Every structure is written in structure tokens, then in C-alpha cells.
Image (cartoon, rainbow, N blue to C red; front, side, top):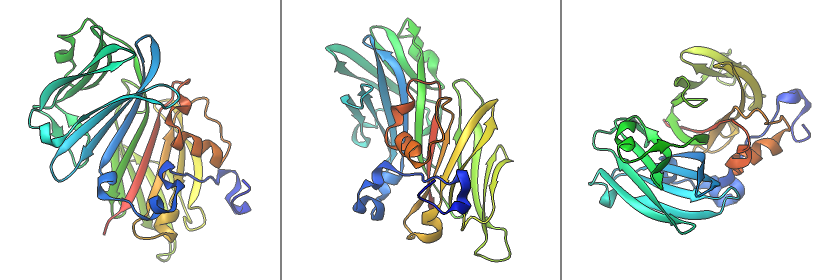
Length: 295
């Protein structure tokens, strides 16, 4: 690593955010941008491999979501928004066109339950249907979608981006592989040393410590590999903003299961953060967390 002192060794790596490519983005982050969760899926649609981006929002009015269909180069083919102004109808459908083919989006949040974040926890479904085939289905009420369709096509989740808030503890749910176990993920930053200048970073899965970083002031950026559900998971962290940045800065954590993802330093991490479908040819999954400290 050329960009960091030699004391970081091979584990020194900078985790960069695509939104930080200009100065204003690094200094000004609105609440609206913080209260969202984005999932990127790859599936076959209209005879081609496509990306479907589902973003859940939370604001003072309520919860809403958007669905965007892209090609693999990142070009947007269409976008559909379900906004709070029409969200009183918690069950419905909309149609859009992709390559002159009608795509139907169905959702039902009548019995939906939300946690502290914008993404639903249970009691919902959101499905995308093309020519009577389900190309994407999320939620736990899948049987309602199957009533309208014939079969389910294979889809793969590539990326999840989420903003989490806390004082010293930041938690979320994560599923590293399709139909795999859902884990409780907790990131803790505490002063375990002789003084406040000796913070320690701890990552837990289901209460079990899977990663611990001592002397965080000197190791504020780094990476290591842990094993989850029999899979090697590369963990990258950048807590520079927590220790040396402004009070509005977030730490960034990335959990990457792409088998073809190489340890090539900051460039490799930046590529996955900026271009989430860079792993589209593998069976991997990437979780990116932006951890905001709140007093």
C-alpha cells in the first residue's frame, strides 16, 4: 500500500464512497439521504441480464420506495416511484415499459411492519412480473404473488447499502447468501484501552465476536477476512471520520463475499463501492454500511 504508512502492512485499505467525489458531498449530508436502504439485484428481464435497484425511504410523511431497472452498464431504463402521497393505498400495482415490453410491479404493505429503519421487516411483498413470470420477488408474503403468476425466475442480490445510527453500537440484519441464515450484525466502537485515545473496534455476528481491531487510532482503515456460513467474507473499514473528521461524518464498512474479488488495495474497494455491479459475474454479495454517530 503506497498511500498509507508502512505500519498498516497489507491490511491498510481506504474505503471510499461514490458520493464523496466532490467537496460538498463530503461536508453536507441531509437527513433524507441518510434514511434510505438500497438493494441491487441481478435478474433476467426481456431476454437480457438486468439490474433492479430497490430503494426504501423514510421521511416525516412515512415510508416509500422506488424501483429502477438498469442495464449492466448502469444506464437507467426506467424508474418507478411509490411516494407517500399515494402510499395510503398500501396495496397496488403499476406498469412500466422496458424494450417495448410491459413490466408490472405489485406490492402489498397492508400488514407491513417496520423497524427503526426504512426497510420493511415482515408482512409485505414487492414483486416484478414480466409476461406472467416473476423476475424479482422480495418479502415474506410470496404466496400472494404466485396467485398472479406462473413461475419464479432466478434473481440474485448483489448489493445492499444502508445507513445506521448510534452512539457506540450500530446494528442491522444481514443475509450473506440467498435463502441463507439471517444474522444480527453489530459494530461496536468502545474505549477498551487505558484512556479515550485507545478505542477498539469490534464486529459481532449473532453476539459472537468475529473481528476485533485494537489501537484503532493507528488502524482506522484496514481489511481482514472472516468466515460466515462457510463463506470467506472480506471486511473493510474506514473510521477516519469518527476519529479525525467532523461530527457529521460517517464511518464506512463493507462486507464482501465476491469469490473473484481480489485484494488489490483501495482501487478494488473504490470500484465495488462506486460500481456495485462490478461483481455481477460472480455469485457474491456486498453489504455497505454507513455508520453515523449520534449523541
